[in-house]
Image (cartoon, rainbow, N blue to C red; front, side):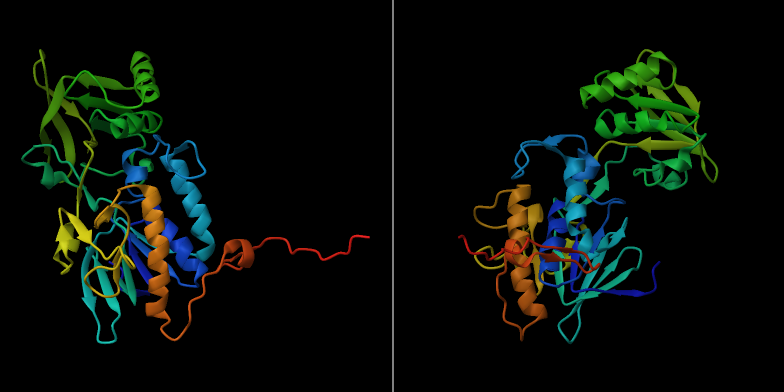
Length: 355
């Protein structure tokens, strides 16, 4: 638990592409940002669900991988020195007498800001858990739904369950780290990038990984930590496999989570906003941008979220600086001056007579 309070201008809930671009737009207006995300890494659903899949509708990029887009957005906004609280879910929102907000996470980290921006994509992600009665007993004691530090699996015996990109990719990565990797999938067909499927096949052929298809884990055993799993495989007797870790990677379920209890107007699991003006919610000072919001004519596209974040920042500026007059400035004219001391600007025009 973090006992200190984090103070910022914009507290942004969601470190996906729209949240990251909001940092850049806020920075142009000299507003500082701190981002909260329940996922352990930056990038939101891009980095968690389809990091290596191409996106074709980002302006200026005929094709760009999701991970690459995240990295470019992070590079674009890093000069404005955003702070991050990762692996923690925004739990509560309270308003102080001075109009500012306090956002507290499930791990007790306190954030204070005059403006809160919900850029949570499809919401906070919760892992799809296998139907194993004792699984909660072993959570964080051998059962992990997220992988924050692959090094904890070095020289360990690891079982991975799943048939999508995440299960395939981590099977490949951990084959270089763990002493033993077993991939378990309930079907005999995998839904992932062809290159990943072929790589796992190659690793299986040279006995670097074991693959069990038409199979599922039905029980977990151990005292204070996971010690073994029970595998039920079609046309095979049940098998007990000794493991140190079991990673069920069945994807994530998007949910608004605690945000739905904040008094916001909700419609079909999305937050209603005033799109005719500023993307503000029914709570003054709380905005919602990106896929998490809804309004007439809403399109759930990343590029639309970029637009919403840009407009939102203009109105957030007025809340934070009520005495200042806002003047729209173009980066081609003013350049970009970062909080880290960096500066980018267009070369000055030279006035010279032509003889």
